[in-house]
Image 1 (cartoon, rainbow over the protein chains, first blue to last red):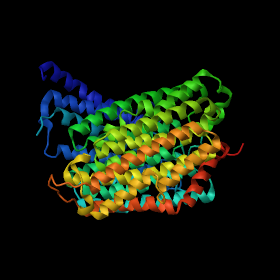
Image 2: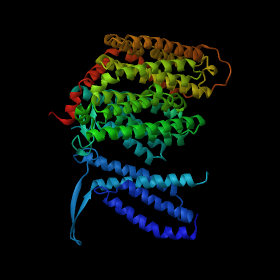
Image 3: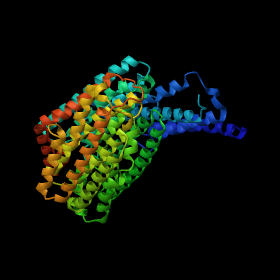
Length: 140
Length: 492
Protein backbone atom coordinates (compact mmCIF):
# COMPACT_ATOMS: atom_id res chain seq x y z
CA UNK A 1 0.00 0.00 0.00
CA UNK A 2 2.65 2.52 0.97
CA UNK A 3 4.24 3.17 -2.40
CA UNK A 4 6.24 6.30 -3.11
CA UNK A 5 3.35 7.78 -5.11
CA UNK A 6 0.90 7.25 -2.28
CA UNK A 7 3.25 8.67 0.31
CA UNK A 8 3.99 11.75 -1.76
CA UNK A 9 0.35 12.43 -2.51
CA UNK A 10 -0.49 11.97 1.16
CA UNK A 11 2.09 14.60 2.06
CA UNK A 12 0.56 17.01 -0.36
CA UNK A 13 -3.09 16.25 0.39
CA UNK A 14 -3.23 15.94 4.17
CA UNK A 15 -2.36 19.59 5.01
CA UNK A 16 -4.95 20.74 2.49
CA UNK A 17 -7.52 18.38 3.97
CA UNK A 18 -6.84 19.64 7.48
CA UNK A 19 -7.07 23.30 6.53
CA UNK A 20 -10.21 22.78 4.49
CA UNK A 21 -11.82 20.81 7.31
CA UNK A 22 -11.05 23.58 9.79
CA UNK A 23 -12.53 26.09 7.32
CA UNK A 24 -15.71 24.01 7.11
CA UNK A 25 -15.81 23.69 10.89
CA UNK A 26 -15.50 27.41 11.54
CA UNK A 27 -18.20 28.50 9.08
CA UNK A 28 -20.46 25.55 9.82
CA UNK A 29 -22.94 27.16 12.20
CA UNK A 30 -24.11 29.68 9.59
CA UNK A 31 -23.12 28.34 6.17
CA UNK A 32 -22.84 24.91 4.55
CA UNK A 33 -20.29 22.85 6.47
CA UNK A 34 -20.24 21.97 10.15
CA UNK A 35 -18.69 19.73 12.73
CA UNK A 36 -19.82 16.46 11.24
CA UNK A 37 -18.40 16.93 7.77
CA UNK A 38 -15.25 18.56 9.12
CA UNK A 39 -14.72 15.70 11.53
CA UNK A 40 -15.07 13.16 8.73
CA UNK A 41 -12.53 15.06 6.70
CA UNK A 42 -10.01 15.36 9.50
CA UNK A 43 -10.30 11.71 10.42
CA UNK A 44 -9.85 10.69 6.79
CA UNK A 45 -6.68 12.78 6.80
CA UNK A 46 -5.44 10.98 9.90
CA UNK A 47 -6.31 7.64 8.34
CA UNK A 48 -4.41 8.56 5.17
CA UNK A 49 -1.32 9.15 7.30
CA UNK A 50 -1.83 5.80 9.00
CA UNK A 51 -2.22 4.04 5.65
CA UNK A 52 0.79 5.68 4.06
CA UNK A 53 3.23 5.75 6.97
CA UNK A 54 1.87 3.11 9.31
CA UNK A 55 1.79 3.80 13.01
CA UNK A 56 4.99 5.80 12.95
CA UNK A 57 3.06 8.69 14.43
CA UNK A 58 1.80 6.39 17.10
CA UNK A 59 2.11 7.10 20.78
CA UNK A 60 1.46 5.04 23.84
CA UNK A 61 -2.01 6.17 24.83
CA UNK A 62 -3.47 6.56 21.34
CA UNK A 63 -6.57 4.43 22.11
CA UNK A 64 -7.32 6.31 25.32
CA UNK A 65 -6.72 9.66 23.60
CA UNK A 66 -9.36 9.06 20.94
CA UNK A 67 -11.73 7.54 23.50
CA UNK A 68 -11.56 10.68 25.61
CA UNK A 69 -11.68 12.81 22.46
CA UNK A 70 -15.12 11.56 21.55
CA UNK A 71 -16.54 11.35 25.05
CA UNK A 72 -15.10 14.79 25.81
CA UNK A 73 -16.58 16.15 22.59
CA UNK A 74 -19.95 14.73 23.52
CA UNK A 75 -19.64 16.36 26.94
CA UNK A 76 -18.68 19.69 25.34
CA UNK A 77 -21.72 19.71 23.04
CA UNK A 78 -23.97 18.69 25.90
CA UNK A 79 -22.60 21.44 28.14
CA UNK A 80 -23.21 24.05 25.43
CA UNK A 81 -26.81 22.84 25.29
CA UNK A 82 -27.04 23.04 29.07
CA UNK A 83 -25.52 26.53 29.06
CA UNK A 84 -28.51 27.67 27.02
CA UNK A 85 -30.72 26.27 29.73
CA UNK A 86 -28.86 27.88 32.61
CA UNK A 87 -28.47 31.34 31.10
CA UNK A 88 -32.12 32.12 30.81
CA UNK A 89 -33.08 30.40 27.60
CA UNK A 90 -34.00 26.83 26.80
CA UNK A 91 -31.98 23.70 26.22
CA UNK A 92 -29.80 24.08 23.09
CA UNK A 93 -30.44 27.85 22.85
CA UNK A 94 -27.52 29.53 21.16
CA UNK A 95 -26.03 32.82 22.29
CA UNK A 96 -24.48 35.21 19.76
CA UNK A 97 -22.19 38.17 20.29
CA UNK A 98 -20.43 40.43 17.82
CA UNK A 99 -16.93 41.47 18.78
CA UNK A 100 -15.02 44.24 17.08
CA UNK A 101 -11.58 43.01 16.11
CA UNK A 102 -9.06 45.81 16.61
CA UNK A 103 -6.32 45.16 14.07
CA UNK A 104 -8.35 44.08 11.05
CA UNK A 105 -11.18 46.48 11.85
CA UNK A 106 -14.02 44.00 11.31
CA UNK A 107 -16.96 42.67 13.32
CA UNK A 108 -16.56 39.02 14.12
CA UNK A 109 -19.48 36.88 15.16
CA UNK A 110 -19.07 34.46 18.03
CA UNK A 111 -21.92 32.00 18.52
CA UNK A 112 -22.15 29.28 21.13
CA UNK A 113 -23.50 27.08 18.32
CA UNK A 114 -19.93 27.09 17.00
CA UNK A 115 -18.69 25.53 20.25
CA UNK A 116 -21.42 22.93 19.87
CA UNK A 117 -19.99 22.23 16.42
CA UNK A 118 -16.52 21.80 17.92
CA UNK A 119 -17.98 19.12 20.18
CA UNK A 120 -19.51 17.35 17.19
CA UNK A 121 -16.15 17.63 15.40
CA UNK A 122 -14.33 15.92 18.27
CA UNK A 123 -16.95 13.17 18.49
CA UNK A 124 -16.75 12.38 14.79
CA UNK A 125 -12.94 12.45 14.77
CA UNK A 126 -12.68 10.25 17.83
CA UNK A 127 -15.25 7.73 16.71
CA UNK A 128 -14.01 7.42 13.12
CA UNK A 129 -10.36 6.99 14.03
CA UNK A 130 -11.18 4.54 16.85
CA UNK A 131 -13.44 2.48 14.58
CA UNK A 132 -11.00 2.37 11.70
CA UNK A 133 -8.01 1.47 13.83
CA UNK A 134 -10.03 -1.23 15.60
CA UNK A 135 -11.10 -2.68 12.25
CA UNK A 136 -7.59 -2.42 10.81
CA UNK A 137 -5.63 -3.75 13.77
CA UNK A 138 -4.84 -7.39 14.10
CA UNK A 139 -6.71 -8.92 16.97
CA UNK A 140 -4.67 -8.75 20.14
CA UNK B 1 -42.11 27.72 30.71
CA UNK B 2 -40.62 25.15 33.03
CA UNK B 3 -37.68 23.00 32.23
CA UNK B 4 -39.33 19.90 33.68
CA UNK B 5 -40.34 18.67 30.25
CA UNK B 6 -36.81 18.49 28.88
CA UNK B 7 -35.28 16.84 31.97
CA UNK B 8 -36.39 13.27 31.11
CA UNK B 9 -34.25 13.59 28.00
CA UNK B 10 -31.33 15.59 29.42
CA UNK B 11 -30.77 13.59 32.59
CA UNK B 12 -30.12 10.17 30.99
CA UNK B 13 -28.15 11.79 28.17
CA UNK B 14 -25.89 13.66 30.57
CA UNK B 15 -25.49 10.57 32.71
CA UNK B 16 -24.46 8.51 29.69
CA UNK B 17 -21.77 11.04 28.80
CA UNK B 18 -20.58 11.25 32.41
CA UNK B 19 -20.35 7.46 32.54
CA UNK B 20 -18.19 7.46 29.41
CA UNK B 21 -15.81 9.91 31.07
CA UNK B 22 -15.82 8.05 34.40
CA UNK B 23 -14.95 4.74 32.76
CA UNK B 24 -11.96 3.81 34.97
CA UNK B 25 -13.67 4.65 38.27
CA UNK B 26 -16.10 1.89 39.25
CA UNK B 27 -17.37 3.43 42.48
CA UNK B 28 -18.05 6.81 40.88
CA UNK B 29 -19.95 5.10 38.08
CA UNK B 30 -22.13 3.15 40.50
CA UNK B 31 -22.96 6.29 42.49
CA UNK B 32 -23.79 8.23 39.31
CA UNK B 33 -26.01 5.44 38.03
CA UNK B 34 -27.95 5.13 41.28
CA UNK B 35 -28.45 8.87 41.75
CA UNK B 36 -29.43 9.75 38.23
CA UNK B 37 -31.51 6.62 37.68
CA UNK B 38 -33.66 7.44 40.69
CA UNK B 39 -33.68 11.13 39.79
CA UNK B 40 -34.97 10.40 36.30
CA UNK B 41 -37.70 8.20 37.76
CA UNK B 42 -38.67 10.97 40.16
CA UNK B 43 -38.62 13.63 37.43
CA UNK B 44 -40.80 11.50 35.17
CA UNK B 45 -43.34 10.86 37.88
CA UNK B 46 -43.52 14.53 38.82
CA UNK B 47 -43.86 15.40 35.13
CA UNK B 48 -46.88 13.08 34.90
CA UNK B 49 -48.49 14.79 37.91
CA UNK B 50 -47.70 18.21 36.52
CA UNK B 51 -49.33 17.30 33.19
CA UNK B 52 -52.33 15.97 35.08
CA UNK B 53 -52.67 19.24 36.98
CA UNK B 54 -51.85 21.81 34.32
CA UNK B 55 -52.84 20.14 31.04
CA UNK B 56 -50.65 19.67 27.98
CA UNK B 57 -47.23 21.31 28.24
CA UNK B 58 -44.78 22.25 25.53
CA UNK B 59 -41.08 23.05 25.52
CA UNK B 60 -39.38 24.92 22.70
CA UNK B 61 -35.93 23.48 22.07
CA UNK B 62 -33.45 26.25 21.32
CA UNK B 63 -36.18 28.83 21.86
CA UNK B 64 -37.58 28.56 18.33
CA UNK B 65 -41.34 28.95 17.94
CA UNK B 66 -43.32 25.79 17.06
CA UNK B 67 -43.93 25.24 13.39
CA UNK B 68 -40.29 26.10 12.68
CA UNK B 69 -38.39 24.78 15.66
CA UNK B 70 -38.65 21.44 17.36
CA UNK B 71 -40.99 21.23 20.33
CA UNK B 72 -41.29 18.70 23.08
CA UNK B 73 -44.92 18.08 23.98
CA UNK B 74 -46.07 16.39 27.15
CA UNK B 75 -49.62 15.15 27.21
CA UNK B 76 -51.05 12.43 29.43
CA UNK B 77 -50.14 9.68 26.97
CA UNK B 78 -46.48 10.74 26.89
CA UNK B 79 -46.49 11.17 30.65
CA UNK B 80 -47.84 7.67 31.25
CA UNK B 81 -45.39 6.12 28.81
CA UNK B 82 -42.28 7.80 30.24
CA UNK B 83 -43.28 6.77 33.76
CA UNK B 84 -43.74 3.17 32.59
CA UNK B 85 -40.41 3.37 30.78
CA UNK B 86 -38.56 4.68 33.79
CA UNK B 87 -40.00 2.10 36.20
CA UNK B 88 -38.83 -0.69 33.91
CA UNK B 89 -35.49 1.02 33.27
CA UNK B 90 -34.72 1.47 36.96
CA UNK B 91 -35.48 -2.20 37.63
CA UNK B 92 -33.40 -3.29 34.63
CA UNK B 93 -30.49 -1.10 35.81
CA UNK B 94 -30.63 -2.61 39.28
CA UNK B 95 -30.79 -6.06 37.73
CA UNK B 96 -27.81 -5.41 35.47
CA UNK B 97 -25.39 -4.88 38.38
CA UNK B 98 -25.66 -8.51 39.37
CA UNK B 99 -26.42 -9.91 35.94
CA UNK B 100 -23.25 -8.62 34.30
CA UNK B 101 -20.55 -9.96 36.55
CA UNK B 102 -17.49 -8.51 34.84
CA UNK B 103 -16.68 -4.86 35.21
CA UNK B 104 -15.67 -4.35 31.55
CA UNK B 105 -19.15 -5.49 30.52
CA UNK B 106 -20.69 -2.92 32.83
CA UNK B 107 -18.39 -0.22 31.43
CA UNK B 108 -20.00 -0.72 28.01
CA UNK B 109 -23.47 -1.57 29.20
CA UNK B 110 -24.36 1.37 31.40
CA UNK B 111 -23.58 4.34 29.11
CA UNK B 112 -25.39 2.62 26.25
CA UNK B 113 -28.31 1.85 28.53
CA UNK B 114 -28.64 5.51 29.43
CA UNK B 115 -28.49 6.49 25.75
CA UNK B 116 -31.30 4.00 25.17
CA UNK B 117 -33.28 5.52 28.01
CA UNK B 118 -32.74 9.05 26.67
CA UNK B 119 -33.90 7.86 23.24
CA UNK B 120 -37.10 6.30 24.54
CA UNK B 121 -37.95 9.34 26.67
CA UNK B 122 -37.23 11.60 23.71
CA UNK B 123 -39.42 9.51 21.39
CA UNK B 124 -42.31 9.74 23.84
CA UNK B 125 -41.95 13.49 24.29
CA UNK B 126 -41.14 14.85 20.86
CA UNK B 127 -43.72 16.75 18.87
CA UNK B 128 -41.93 16.57 15.54
CA UNK B 129 -42.08 13.71 13.06
CA UNK B 130 -38.46 13.93 11.98
CA UNK B 131 -37.29 14.25 15.56
CA UNK B 132 -39.21 11.05 16.25
CA UNK B 133 -37.11 9.40 13.55
CA UNK B 134 -33.93 10.68 15.19
CA UNK B 135 -35.01 9.36 18.59
CA UNK B 136 -35.80 5.98 17.02
CA UNK B 137 -32.27 5.93 15.64
CA UNK B 138 -30.74 6.78 19.05
CA UNK B 139 -32.72 3.91 20.55
CA UNK B 140 -31.86 1.45 17.81
CA UNK B 141 -28.15 2.32 17.75
CA UNK B 142 -27.84 1.64 21.47
CA UNK B 143 -29.91 -1.53 21.19
CA UNK B 144 -27.71 -2.91 18.40
CA UNK B 145 -24.67 -2.55 20.59
CA UNK B 146 -26.35 -3.73 23.79
CA UNK B 147 -27.74 -6.79 22.05
CA UNK B 148 -24.47 -8.04 20.58
CA UNK B 149 -22.34 -6.89 23.51
CA UNK B 150 -21.62 -10.30 25.00
CA UNK B 151 -20.72 -11.72 21.59
CA UNK B 152 -22.76 -14.93 21.78
CA UNK B 153 -23.46 -16.64 18.44
CA UNK B 154 -27.22 -16.38 18.95
CA UNK B 155 -26.90 -12.73 19.91
CA UNK B 156 -24.99 -11.95 16.73
CA UNK B 157 -27.75 -13.70 14.77
CA UNK B 158 -30.39 -11.67 16.60
CA UNK B 159 -28.29 -8.55 16.05
CA UNK B 160 -28.18 -9.09 12.29
CA UNK B 161 -31.95 -9.54 12.21
CA UNK B 162 -32.48 -6.42 14.31
CA UNK B 163 -30.12 -4.33 12.18
CA UNK B 164 -31.71 -5.38 8.88
CA UNK B 165 -35.15 -4.79 10.36
CA UNK B 166 -34.06 -1.42 11.72
CA UNK B 167 -32.52 -0.28 8.45
CA UNK B 168 -35.62 -1.34 6.50
CA UNK B 169 -37.91 0.53 8.85
CA UNK B 170 -35.65 3.60 8.83
CA UNK B 171 -35.77 3.75 5.04
CA UNK B 172 -39.54 3.41 5.05
CA UNK B 173 -39.88 6.03 7.78
CA UNK B 174 -37.71 8.49 5.85
CA UNK B 175 -39.71 7.88 2.68
CA UNK B 176 -42.93 8.54 4.55
CA UNK B 177 -41.52 11.69 6.14
CA UNK B 178 -40.32 12.90 2.73
CA UNK B 179 -43.72 12.25 1.20
CA UNK B 180 -45.61 14.12 3.85
CA UNK B 181 -43.15 17.01 3.79
CA UNK B 182 -43.57 17.33 0.03
CA UNK B 183 -47.32 17.59 0.51
CA UNK B 184 -47.63 19.81 3.56
CA UNK B 185 -44.28 21.56 3.92
CA UNK B 186 -44.05 20.95 7.66
CA UNK B 187 -43.08 18.17 10.01
CA UNK B 188 -44.37 19.52 13.29
CA UNK B 189 -47.11 17.08 14.23
CA UNK B 190 -49.63 19.68 15.40
CA UNK B 191 -48.99 21.83 12.35
CA UNK B 192 -49.32 18.75 10.13
CA UNK B 193 -52.67 17.93 11.71
CA UNK B 194 -53.95 21.32 10.56
CA UNK B 195 -52.26 21.47 7.16
CA UNK B 196 -53.17 17.94 6.09
CA UNK B 197 -56.93 18.55 6.34
CA UNK B 198 -57.40 19.93 2.77
CA UNK B 199 -55.21 17.17 1.28
CA UNK B 200 -56.84 14.25 3.06
CA UNK B 201 -58.16 12.72 -0.20
CA UNK B 202 -54.76 12.94 -1.88
CA UNK B 203 -53.46 9.41 -2.66
CA UNK B 204 -50.08 10.32 -1.15
CA UNK B 205 -51.67 10.74 2.27
CA UNK B 206 -53.01 7.21 2.46
CA UNK B 207 -49.72 5.92 1.04
CA UNK B 208 -47.83 7.72 3.79
CA UNK B 209 -50.27 6.45 6.42
CA UNK B 210 -49.76 2.90 5.15
CA UNK B 211 -45.98 3.29 5.21
CA UNK B 212 -46.14 4.60 8.77
CA UNK B 213 -48.30 1.62 9.80
CA UNK B 214 -45.62 -0.61 8.30
CA UNK B 215 -42.81 1.22 10.13
CA UNK B 216 -44.46 1.32 13.53
CA UNK B 217 -45.88 -2.16 13.00
CA UNK B 218 -42.36 -3.43 12.39
CA UNK B 219 -41.22 -1.83 15.64
CA UNK B 220 -44.23 -3.14 17.53
CA UNK B 221 -44.01 -6.60 15.89
CA UNK B 222 -47.42 -6.50 14.24
CA UNK B 223 -48.22 -9.74 12.48
CA UNK B 224 -46.55 -9.93 9.05
CA UNK B 225 -43.55 -8.13 10.54
CA UNK B 226 -43.24 -10.06 13.79
CA UNK B 227 -40.62 -12.52 12.57
CA UNK B 228 -37.63 -10.68 14.03
CA UNK B 229 -38.94 -10.36 17.56
CA UNK B 230 -38.61 -13.87 19.07
CA UNK B 231 -34.95 -14.26 18.09
CA UNK B 232 -33.99 -10.78 19.22
CA UNK B 233 -35.89 -10.71 22.50
CA UNK B 234 -34.86 -14.18 23.55
CA UNK B 235 -31.17 -13.86 22.74
CA UNK B 236 -30.58 -10.39 24.25
CA UNK B 237 -28.94 -10.05 27.69
CA UNK B 238 -31.81 -10.25 30.19
CA UNK B 239 -32.01 -6.58 31.29
CA UNK B 240 -32.21 -5.68 27.61
CA UNK B 241 -34.87 -8.33 26.94
CA UNK B 242 -36.90 -6.74 29.70
CA UNK B 243 -36.44 -3.30 28.15
CA UNK B 244 -37.22 -4.56 24.65
CA UNK B 245 -40.43 -6.32 25.60
CA UNK B 246 -41.42 -3.90 28.30
CA UNK B 247 -40.97 -0.57 26.60
CA UNK B 248 -39.35 -0.67 23.16
CA UNK B 249 -42.13 -2.45 21.30
CA UNK B 250 -44.50 -0.04 23.03
CA UNK B 251 -42.70 2.85 21.36
CA UNK B 252 -44.04 1.51 18.05
CA UNK B 253 -47.54 1.28 19.48
CA UNK B 254 -47.21 4.79 20.95
CA UNK B 255 -46.13 6.25 17.60
CA UNK B 256 -49.03 4.51 15.86
CA UNK B 257 -51.48 5.96 18.38
CA UNK B 258 -49.94 9.41 18.13
CA UNK B 259 -49.99 9.49 14.34
CA UNK B 260 -53.52 8.14 13.97
CA UNK B 261 -55.06 10.22 16.73
CA UNK B 262 -53.43 13.47 15.67
CA UNK B 263 -52.43 13.58 12.01
CA UNK B 264 -54.57 10.99 10.22
CA UNK B 265 -57.71 11.47 12.29
CA UNK B 266 -59.89 11.35 9.18
CA UNK B 267 -58.35 8.08 8.03
CA UNK B 268 -59.28 6.20 11.21
CA UNK B 269 -62.35 4.57 9.67
CA UNK B 270 -60.46 3.72 6.50
CA UNK B 271 -57.73 1.79 8.35
CA UNK B 272 -59.84 0.41 11.19
CA UNK B 273 -60.68 -2.98 9.64
CA UNK B 274 -57.08 -3.39 8.51
CA UNK B 275 -55.61 -2.70 11.95
CA UNK B 276 -58.16 -4.88 13.78
CA UNK B 277 -57.64 -7.80 11.37
CA UNK B 278 -53.87 -7.62 11.72
CA UNK B 279 -54.21 -7.32 15.50
CA UNK B 280 -56.34 -10.47 15.67
CA UNK B 281 -53.91 -12.43 13.49
CA UNK B 282 -51.01 -11.10 15.58
CA UNK B 283 -52.43 -12.32 18.86
CA UNK B 284 -53.41 -15.67 17.38
CA UNK B 285 -50.03 -16.32 15.73
CA UNK B 286 -48.14 -15.16 18.81
CA UNK B 287 -50.23 -17.32 21.12
CA UNK B 288 -49.84 -20.40 18.90
CA UNK B 289 -46.10 -19.78 18.63
CA UNK B 290 -45.77 -19.48 22.39
CA UNK B 291 -47.54 -22.80 23.02
CA UNK B 292 -45.06 -24.57 20.74
CA UNK B 293 -41.88 -23.24 22.38
CA UNK B 294 -39.70 -25.38 24.61
CA UNK B 295 -37.56 -22.46 25.75
CA UNK B 296 -38.92 -20.15 28.44
CA UNK B 297 -37.42 -16.94 27.06
CA UNK B 298 -38.61 -17.70 23.52
CA UNK B 299 -42.04 -18.47 24.91
CA UNK B 300 -42.13 -15.09 26.63
CA UNK B 301 -41.01 -13.42 23.39
CA UNK B 302 -43.81 -15.06 21.40
CA UNK B 303 -46.16 -14.10 24.19
CA UNK B 304 -45.06 -10.47 23.69
CA UNK B 305 -46.11 -10.73 20.04
CA UNK B 306 -49.49 -12.03 21.11
CA UNK B 307 -49.97 -9.35 23.77
CA UNK B 308 -49.06 -6.59 21.31
CA UNK B 309 -51.96 -7.93 19.26
CA UNK B 310 -54.29 -7.21 22.20
CA UNK B 311 -52.94 -3.69 22.55
CA UNK B 312 -53.33 -3.03 18.83
CA UNK B 313 -56.86 -4.42 19.00
CA UNK B 314 -57.72 -1.82 21.63
CA UNK B 315 -56.13 0.88 19.49
CA UNK B 316 -57.99 -0.36 16.42
CA UNK B 317 -61.41 0.16 18.03
CA UNK B 318 -60.73 3.91 17.83
CA UNK B 319 -63.06 4.61 20.73
CA UNK B 320 -62.21 6.31 24.01
CA UNK B 321 -62.89 3.08 25.90
CA UNK B 322 -60.77 1.00 23.54
CA UNK B 323 -57.85 3.42 23.64
CA UNK B 324 -58.00 3.64 27.43
CA UNK B 325 -58.03 -0.14 27.62
CA UNK B 326 -55.07 -0.34 25.24
CA UNK B 327 -53.10 2.13 27.37
CA UNK B 328 -53.86 0.24 30.58
CA UNK B 329 -52.90 -2.97 28.79
CA UNK B 330 -49.62 -1.39 27.68
CA UNK B 331 -48.69 -0.32 31.20
CA UNK B 332 -49.70 -3.52 32.86
CA UNK B 333 -48.12 -5.77 30.22
CA UNK B 334 -44.88 -3.77 30.33
CA UNK B 335 -44.53 -4.28 34.06
CA UNK B 336 -45.51 -7.96 34.08
CA UNK B 337 -43.52 -8.99 31.04
CA UNK B 338 -40.29 -7.30 32.07
CA UNK B 339 -40.62 -8.99 35.47
CA UNK B 340 -41.09 -12.36 33.79
CA UNK B 341 -38.07 -11.81 31.57
CA UNK B 342 -35.97 -10.99 34.62
CA UNK B 343 -37.21 -14.19 36.25
CA UNK B 344 -36.15 -16.08 33.12
CA UNK B 345 -32.74 -14.45 33.43
CA UNK B 346 -32.48 -15.80 36.99
CA UNK B 347 -33.14 -19.28 35.63
CA UNK B 348 -30.53 -18.77 32.94
CA UNK B 349 -27.93 -17.73 35.52
CA UNK B 350 -28.75 -20.82 37.56
CA UNK B 351 -28.48 -23.59 35.00
CA UNK B 352 -27.00 -21.77 32.01
CA UNK B 353 -30.06 -22.33 29.86
CA UNK B 354 -33.69 -21.32 29.68
CA UNK B 355 -34.90 -24.58 28.16
CA UNK B 356 -37.94 -25.66 30.09
CA UNK B 357 -37.07 -29.37 30.10
CA UNK B 358 -33.82 -28.71 31.96
CA UNK B 359 -35.52 -26.85 34.80
CA UNK B 360 -37.63 -27.98 37.71
CA UNK B 361 -37.97 -28.24 41.49
CA UNK B 362 -37.75 -24.46 41.90
CA UNK B 363 -40.35 -24.58 44.64
CA UNK B 364 -37.82 -26.44 46.78
CA UNK B 365 -34.76 -24.49 45.66
CA UNK B 366 -36.22 -21.02 45.98
CA UNK B 367 -39.82 -20.67 47.18
CA UNK B 368 -39.64 -16.87 46.90
CA UNK B 369 -38.76 -17.12 43.23
CA UNK B 370 -41.66 -19.53 42.65
CA UNK B 371 -44.05 -17.11 44.32
CA UNK B 372 -42.88 -14.16 42.20
CA UNK B 373 -43.09 -16.26 39.06
CA UNK B 374 -46.58 -17.39 40.01
CA UNK B 375 -47.71 -13.81 40.51
CA UNK B 376 -46.27 -12.82 37.12
CA UNK B 377 -47.79 -15.81 35.35
CA UNK B 378 -51.19 -15.34 36.97
CA UNK B 379 -51.09 -11.63 36.17
CA UNK B 380 -50.30 -12.17 32.50
CA UNK B 381 -52.82 -15.00 32.26
CA UNK B 382 -55.52 -12.64 33.49
CA UNK B 383 -56.39 -14.06 36.89
CA UNK B 384 -57.72 -11.55 39.43
CA UNK B 385 -56.68 -9.81 41.63
CA UNK B 386 -53.51 -9.12 39.60
CA UNK B 387 -53.59 -6.38 36.98
CA UNK B 388 -53.86 -8.78 34.03
CA UNK B 389 -57.51 -9.41 34.78
CA UNK B 390 -58.39 -5.74 34.61
CA UNK B 391 -56.45 -5.18 31.41
CA UNK B 392 -58.37 -7.95 29.64
CA UNK B 393 -61.67 -6.95 31.27
CA UNK B 394 -61.31 -3.35 30.09
CA UNK B 395 -60.55 -4.49 26.57
CA UNK B 396 -63.52 -6.86 26.40
CA UNK B 397 -65.81 -4.19 27.83
CA UNK B 398 -64.64 -1.66 25.23
CA UNK B 399 -65.11 -4.25 22.50
CA UNK B 400 -68.70 -4.99 23.50
CA UNK B 401 -69.48 -1.29 23.75
CA UNK B 402 -68.20 -0.79 20.21
CA UNK B 403 -69.94 -3.91 18.88
CA UNK B 404 -66.75 -5.76 17.88
CA UNK B 405 -67.91 -9.26 18.80
CA UNK B 406 -65.73 -11.43 16.56
CA UNK B 407 -62.37 -9.82 17.53
CA UNK B 408 -63.34 -10.11 21.19
CA UNK B 409 -64.20 -13.79 20.74
CA UNK B 410 -60.78 -14.39 19.18
CA UNK B 411 -59.11 -12.43 22.00
CA UNK B 412 -60.85 -14.56 24.62
CA UNK B 413 -59.90 -17.83 22.91
CA UNK B 414 -56.28 -16.71 22.64
CA UNK B 415 -56.26 -15.69 26.30
CA UNK B 416 -57.07 -19.33 27.14
CA UNK B 417 -53.92 -20.32 25.27
CA UNK B 418 -51.99 -17.71 27.24
CA UNK B 419 -53.22 -19.19 30.48
CA UNK B 420 -52.39 -22.69 29.25
CA UNK B 421 -48.80 -22.15 28.14
CA UNK B 422 -47.87 -19.90 31.06
CA UNK B 423 -49.14 -22.31 33.71
CA UNK B 424 -47.61 -25.28 31.91
CA UNK B 425 -44.24 -23.53 32.07
CA UNK B 426 -44.72 -22.53 35.69
CA UNK B 427 -45.56 -26.11 36.60
CA UNK B 428 -42.50 -27.40 34.74
CA UNK B 429 -40.15 -24.86 36.33
CA UNK B 430 -41.46 -24.98 39.87
CA UNK B 431 -43.15 -28.31 40.52
CA UNK B 432 -41.55 -30.98 38.30
CA UNK B 433 -38.74 -32.96 39.91
CA UNK B 434 -35.40 -32.11 38.37
CA UNK B 435 -32.32 -34.01 39.51
CA UNK B 436 -29.83 -33.48 36.66
CA UNK B 437 -27.61 -30.51 35.92
CA UNK B 438 -25.62 -28.97 38.74
CA UNK B 439 -27.06 -25.72 40.04
CA UNK B 440 -25.03 -22.56 40.52
CA UNK B 441 -27.10 -20.37 42.79
CA UNK B 442 -27.08 -16.81 41.38
CA UNK B 443 -27.01 -13.73 43.54
CA UNK B 444 -30.27 -13.25 45.41
CA UNK B 445 -30.20 -9.55 44.56
CA UNK B 446 -31.46 -10.54 41.13
CA UNK B 447 -34.77 -11.39 42.77
CA UNK B 448 -35.31 -7.88 44.14
CA UNK B 449 -36.32 -6.22 40.82
CA UNK B 450 -38.39 -9.31 39.95
CA UNK B 451 -40.16 -8.95 43.27
CA UNK B 452 -40.68 -5.22 42.84
CA UNK B 453 -42.26 -5.75 39.42
CA UNK B 454 -44.42 -8.64 40.67
CA UNK B 455 -45.65 -6.52 43.58
CA UNK B 456 -46.31 -3.63 41.20
CA UNK B 457 -48.40 -5.97 39.04
CA UNK B 458 -50.38 -6.93 42.16
CA UNK B 459 -50.68 -3.31 43.28
CA UNK B 460 -51.87 -2.33 39.82
CA UNK B 461 -54.59 -4.94 40.27
CA UNK B 462 -55.70 -3.86 43.74
CA UNK B 463 -55.39 -0.17 42.95
CA UNK B 464 -56.54 -0.44 39.37
CA UNK B 465 -59.17 2.26 39.45
CA UNK B 466 -56.96 5.41 39.67
CA UNK B 467 -54.74 4.09 36.88
CA UNK B 468 -57.76 3.19 34.76
CA UNK B 469 -59.14 6.69 35.33
CA UNK B 470 -55.81 8.15 34.26
CA UNK B 471 -55.66 6.06 31.09
CA UNK B 472 -59.25 6.96 30.27
CA UNK B 473 -58.39 10.64 30.72
CA UNK B 474 -55.40 10.16 28.42
CA UNK B 475 -57.66 8.50 25.85
CA UNK B 476 -60.19 11.34 26.06
CA UNK B 477 -57.33 13.78 25.50
CA UNK B 478 -56.24 11.78 22.45
CA UNK B 479 -59.71 11.96 20.92
CA UNK B 480 -59.80 15.73 21.33
CA UNK B 481 -56.72 16.60 19.23
CA UNK B 482 -57.68 20.31 19.27
CA UNK B 483 -56.23 20.50 22.79
CA UNK B 484 -52.86 19.27 21.55
CA UNK B 485 -52.90 21.56 18.51
CA UNK B 486 -53.86 24.61 20.57
CA UNK B 487 -51.19 23.86 23.14
CA UNK B 488 -48.48 23.70 20.48
CA UNK B 489 -49.53 26.38 18.01
CA UNK B 490 -51.38 28.68 20.39
CA UNK B 491 -55.02 29.69 20.18
CA UNK B 492 -56.07 30.78 16.72
